Length: 281
Image (cartoon, rainbow, N blue to C red; front, top):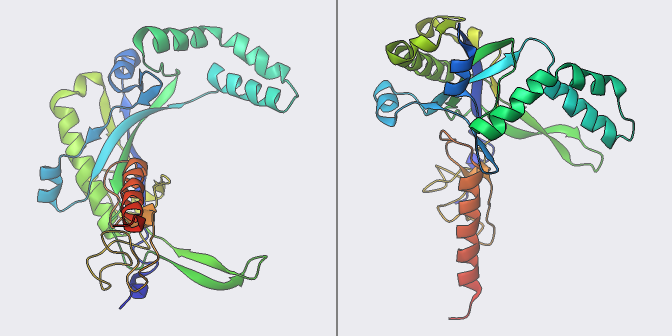
């Protein structure tokens, strides 16, 4: 038997949606609480993770919440980025340089927070958005198939069917409700949560701004047998013993974190196994 019946099925990603804002009288304190932190060459964000025991009890997948500023006007940071890009194009933009000078106070604070507090200084004024991120529930109808249209080389183009379903909406309801309770229990001095839709009333229609965050998994999923997946626990394709798949497409679920590190571990494990198989006994 092989896993062709499962090929292309259960295409999924992490879903992210800005579902609330924080109204605060003290942006500095909120910045200190939730702003990005620098550790060496890495930048880390504060995540409010959904406890495994709580999500299992609620029948929901993994998820977390983070707070991010949405600048209400261009900042000196944007001007620096545009000026650097203009230099790369060998056409320096004098207007971008002028905007850098006009927003020098913000850039000075940005530098002071970066090296003094090891934290990212948020621009002001900003809208402080509450982003809920959930693991998408594997669904059979979310799939990748081959279309009848051909590319330049005469090969079929991919056709993707991918939608947010009721299970995903429930995940957002459970996560946002848990975060709302947690915030009001101890973090309300930092500001007031303003939900676009009450967490308990959230539906699919309210997730129009929900989108993927470039962590696709599924379509060649790992399983215990061909009825469950395309590859086995060693990433070997069922029914084709000399073919292996090393990609996030083998993940049966997305979990709560970026998949890159787990993929690297999968690849290293597979490399060690293939090397051992080739070495003479």
